Image (cartoon, rainbow, N blue to C red; front, side, top):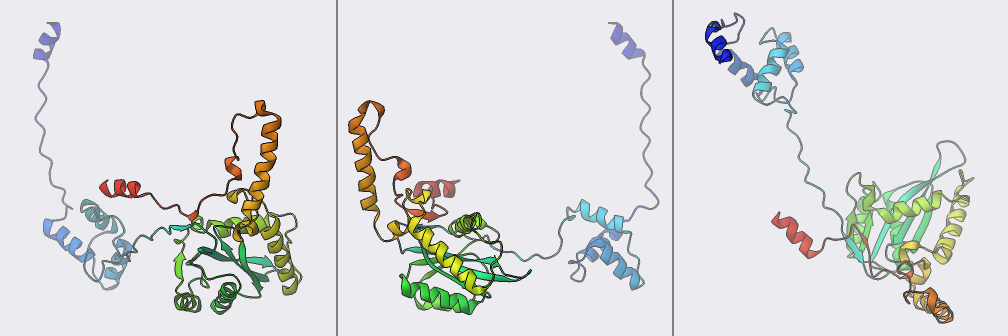
Length: 312
């Protein structure tokens, strides 16, 4: 009750006085001219500061730079106004190999030479299923022609794969390489720009190489570089127990020798199972020691997943 009485006695607010139009306010036609000028063919690719400077240089004052921005902001054009090249989204490379010889991936890494700023280029090609190094050459430089000769020699020594994957380096995308693969009916595959995970086998192999204690900080000559890489590749192929292929060696997988190794492993486990059955809950080869059914670059989505994405 008390509040009602006070509200009734309270003075009424004075009516709001109408605001006067500022003397410097632009007219509708002036703002239309500003917007038309900013979006004209001549100035559509330029920022307001540039337009302002050009018009003043030609003896014309249209408005201030801040006014240009205000007009553009009102029209929701304060963003990149220039015509932009529209690049389609790069397709994700999805490659699967179920056997050796199906998909090869290659790349080039550098070995520091005897003097500062000098390098040798190691061309390395890998079978993604077996992790076997099917080819390795070291040259004093990188070029498309050398890449073509390298690939041709690998194919002559090992076999011609269905697909060759690489990143988008100049040698990888060069005309000599493209022509060679086209002539041999080998599908070319490339990583997306700035996506190193699209070439994981080469990147992982280079890391294995360069993190070794025996990796030289510098090599004395091209011959030294070639000798080191030859010895390393031979040791890697024949002796490296790779976790991605059931701790087999790349050579065993590449040449189909894993059956003998698995028989030996199972025989050793069987003897342990028989001697102490109480110590084992399951009698099977550990999953980490099993050879995977496939290797891939960007595992392809299953049909159901694709259908779900399409529906969404």
